[in-house]
Image (cartoon, rainbow over all chains, first blue to last red):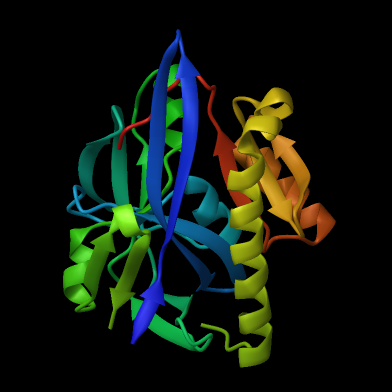
Length: 153
Length: 82
């Protein structure tokens, strides 16, 4: 079963130099106490998976008080806390719903830092890393030059 | 965990996907007004914006739009690598 991913890109012009920012996005509904729409960035360079602070607030979920680990993500020092099991609802290429019940996700919270670093940490995206792909036995197919990208279950 | 009807989930997933597409298609234009802010998007519209994530979630609750997509709009000259 294939779950389509989206390749999103933005062209930025910075001081006469063009940068193309590309991201591989998975749109989902996350269900905890309610339904929340969200996007995850697929990041095979990241060993862990997490939701960001705003998604946690939006889901109205508690985080556990016990810190799991500290990480530097995108230059920001964050504390990773575990959260309750969540259900992710994904759309297959046939338009059906595929449900993933997962306890792979944690939440990334700004660590003790100055206000600037804290503000930056809040802007981190939701990320699906290698642990998620391995735990749920998902295969990742990318042929970006042909605009082909999907997860296979 | 609460169970929701499948049709509702399908509808919400379709809306989320459309709102994500709309955000990326319009990000440059949105940046002019909402640079360095979190925006909540629902039905291809920005329904709330704030620099403070907690305030944004409060606004979404007040609007009854807690299922909106939330995005952060970074400045154009900030190249972000995770």
